[in-house]
Image 1 (spheres, one colour):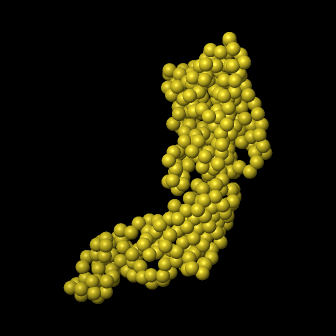
Image 2 (cartoon, helix red, strand yellow):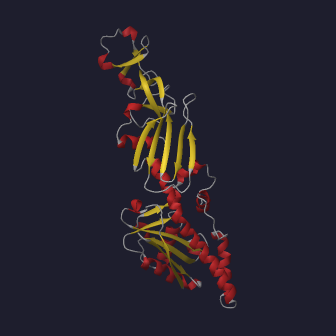
Image 3 (cartoon, rainbow, N blue to C red):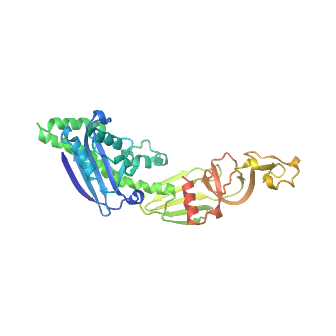
Length: 361
């Protein structure tokens, strides 16, 4: 077995510790000769331990298939106490594969019980947000402008590893070149995950998890939310979300450690629909609904049982849009509209602003 150890500066990366809840963040990736653990070999495991001041990188490489158990055992014994594994689709492949290998070799493993963060799943909302055609790691690398020296994929490297095994005894010089290719692919997979972690800043935006927020109304009658974040957006972006015809779009601009969200302020007469519509009567003459508990003074001839589409009252004022109706009180033009509106004056307090930003995504 061959072991590689390197050290890199941490630099300004996403504070992943806020996600790992006090556990030591460890990025990892494996290389195998196939997808099924029962019929293939594990030949390489790479890891990066994220410390406060630096990144510690390790690789364990099987110089021959018989080194497989040593690679696996070395990785398991190296894992720091209170580890949180960070990976790309590791729940779908890496962890189940290693667990099967542990059972094959009768090695005790707690991998499936360790806390873990799967970037493949965590970043799923970014595919639609950025209009991506792929959710592979290389797609996220390209999104933030990373260029790889490695040009192989995992499947192509199976043949490279097999060629390495064949040449290691008879052509050491050529075998060394192949080894560099195998190690480089795994190293870049792991090292590139470090800057890709910066995409969690977008996830913070989607969750309304910002450090500070300032609001202002501009001269065009729109509300601007200026948000500050703990970390940088790895890629600057600008995006429009359509609301309703004639209302105007929601604009989101992200750059450095800031995001600016501009939403239209709507000065209209809107309807508030009651969800418990069966408890209301609709008054056709007044075009409004009243609760049955206060309807005794209304002539029964002037009222009808309210339906979902007629259980409403009107309100005038200034409103801002949200997706759905999660925040209350919500108002609409029509019940079937996908966009609802909140009273502008209700956006007071940090908690409400966080919930409102979250509602936009």
